[in-house]
Image (cartoon, rainbow, N blue to C red; front, side, top):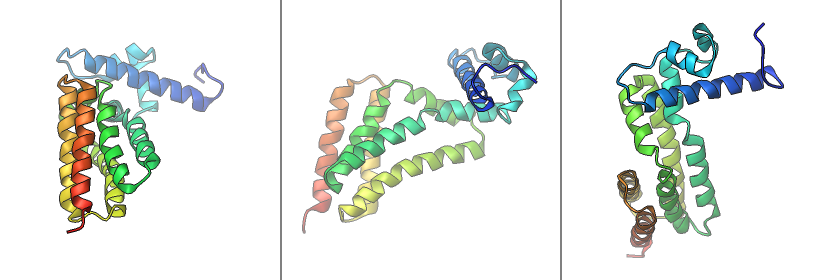
Length: 196
């Protein structure tokens, strides 16, 4: 029986898994041009190489965990912002602003590149599902706001989010980009909810 360094086996497993994800992320960010290996991750995490498979099924699974580790925080922050908005139209603007605000942490571009280059097709499909779940928050608010042409408005707002996130990733002033995103989203929602 391996020695555990936690109050329970469950807590120990969570600690080791977190150490494996941290180790994989560290190694992936080193950009050494080498393939991530179980041996390198296990050595950095301080466990035996064959023990890694008690926590993950494959290195691909570990790469997916690294690529998606910020999703729960990101989605939660966007959901909180949308739910705090006083009206559906304000919820749409909150959705746009909150997404851009989440990009400010600085690792979005790296995680996006990681998911494009290193994930298997099934893992990539799971990442797309996470993005779809996030976009569903926008669709719900647009439906409640009774916008005209919801598909076009959704696509326009998502394009705005994507463009603004790319600008933050590129190093533009986050406050200016967030302010711009909010202003443009307000205009788009206003146009889409105006009576003909």
